[in-house]
Image (cartoon, rainbow, N blue to C red; front, side, top):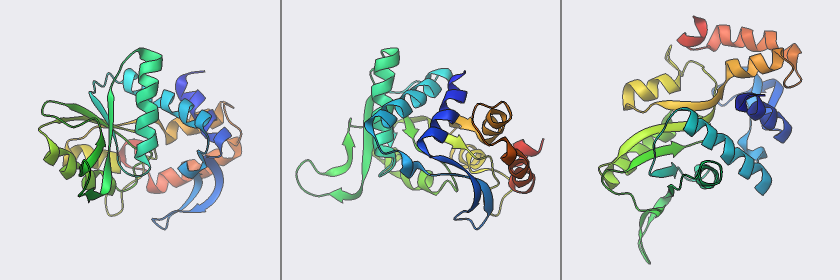
Length: 222
């Protein structure tokens, strides 16, 4: 199997990827759901970090620091930085933000490798729905130093239209913020894995395709 197929099987085995009928925060009723709260063990995080590392390497992303937005991004950036070293011998820093600026001790907004002028930063996140989290964190990063946002890596690109737009949140991130978003897999990879028997649930493919016909962004409709 490719690492993408292995990742989809991993999502299903962890209970992160589920099929059925789910009402999303957006109000849309979807035939599949992703719940990152199902990652619960060190073994799972170690394996997850490896998939992030594979995606970073496959896309040729050069980074001095992996940044994980608080709170979900914190363990993700740590596990990805460990995996980059263990799998590829690439030693990069990791960093995350505080929800509130610390005014005692070492103080500051960030924890981990200090951000410096000239740094190349890759943001590590779970999923991107509306792009709100990226918009919140970019001013913090760009205000800390004259750095380059080399990209953002997420687990799954749902490839759905953002609310009030024909474009996906991934497309908007690049067009509005200049940040290219890379995903370990996308929903079409998941459909292919179902059809090929990589994971069980082939009977859900028609519902997913119908959902994408209604809510899929432009690249899905081509």
